[in-house]
Length: 479
Image (cartoon, rainbow, N blue to C red):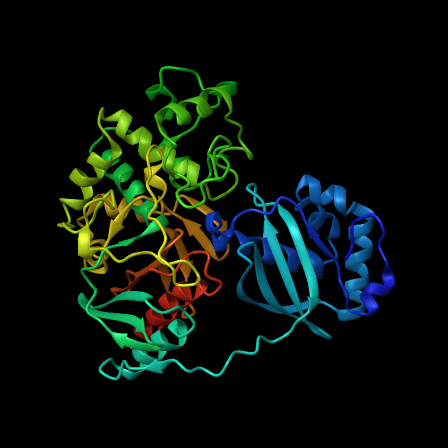
């Protein structure tokens, strides 16, 4: 193990590479696109020998643990022995903290693990020999014979490692026609189930709805995207910081991922007690931007929650009421909710990684970051509404507002990606303690895929939900 002070060159030759861990953040609050950007930049800078740029991507404590000269020496030795990075493949999140990449160098395949802090700075880095995970012989039975073979095989391959009592609810839209595919894992068998009207937490997909409420108010000339939210608060923000509605919707406000006065010791329900008083206290006395507004994309649950709360304040009501009136009622989403209370048997209970039932999350002031509960049938209505150009607020929410990199733009809430077939996809995912979700829409081909599940965001295989979503929509592009 390397502590940043005693770099031992011989360790490289024995492939016992260094490991630095400082200030680990919870992967539950991480979005994989941030990791993708960081690992892409790491590869580019490593291959072009711009080691100072890699050092500059470290957190302050990481820099202390591994000073610049040690960083350069290590990376030079790494490249001399193994060559450039040719390709990399995301594998999973290890221990809920590291993004693990199977990385092909010119002369070896290594495991590169990266952890990010709340500012998307590298605060943990491990490089070591890659070891293939030896899966136990699959004893799970595929009992989805009544589903189309291709869909059955894809769902089975991405679900077989989840615990018993896992449910996935899948909606596939092709040319305005919607088909539903539900599964439940019972007694190590993956069986079909009709769960299109069962309710799940949708997590951060809520952010798309929050931004859609914003777009609706803009279309009605109630507010402008460029308006500052400050005017809706009876106190000045700390350091006279100015924040626009648009920057909250596209994650360019410069705000951190989470407010520093959010009590994360309640890991089972972290947002429950974060109300108006705590949010106002943060804005007035603690607010500190981590980057210049409108210059850097940095995913922020705080920003999305603040957006929803401010929209409610701006219209002298609650954000939940705006959501109900402007979105749920308009698109007949009668099975979508802002609280898990009184949902009875229509509600699918969330599971942890071991398949044990976990508590649902309750949101107060930061509801706009992840508080909606819904069904695939309701989200399919919302997705099909995106295909109708007459829905002006939906079109506005999809309009690109910021270019993150050559692979991704962001609209108001939506992440705009390119599929394997170079088709534009409007995508978002979600994750809470007991649930994972993903939605992708291809407007050009009038296709969409929606997946809701009670797979925990802590589950090491949770990325399978996104992978399944992208693989299913790719099958539609090939039709």
